[in-house]
Length: 236
Picture 1 (cartoon, rainbow, N blue to C red):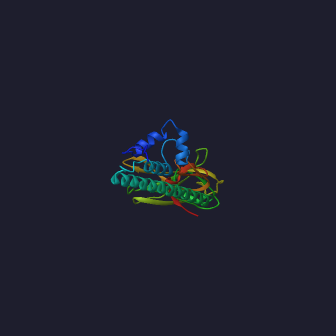
Picture 2: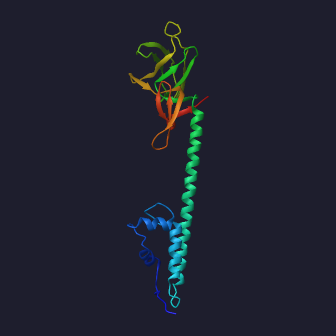
Picture 3: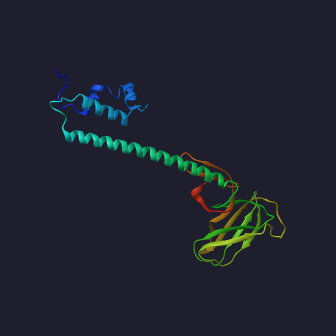
């Protein structure tokens, strides 16, 4: 029986003769079973390997070492494909978990670094400010939406760390003021100069969204949008 095959046929020769190239998208689709025009899938790789075996010269078969190497390549390709599928599943699960977490935050109170807060003056307003070093005195000035000073809370000596303060919702005359958005400014005096300290105020989550990088963004009443990573504490 006459043999038309030649010896030394390798996978590259088969790929070249099969018409699977960057300019032949139709063959890529039929061999790989996908619409990806840039890479060969595992099915196409296996088909090419089988084609190579079918066209080898039986009198001069393919070298065992080369055949084992190609089988190893196929095994690696199979493993990478499975890994990609696993990563995709994990990503989908994380997205679902984030969505569930987001829905549970709506309506809850969080603590963020900010100077403004929506205050229901019928109740006491509890907040904190950051003391960078031990100080002899501290005060928190409360101003309304028009910038008018409502009350100044004297707090005296403070240690480095977090200091608490409470506003009872009254003005300097002890009268209850209207609920609304108020600004809280914590200051101290260092070397004869007034220094402003960061305030940590509560705010209610009104909605949650995700930015282009997939990070969760909270929309806070009276504050606006802040990243979840900027939240200091999540309360009830």
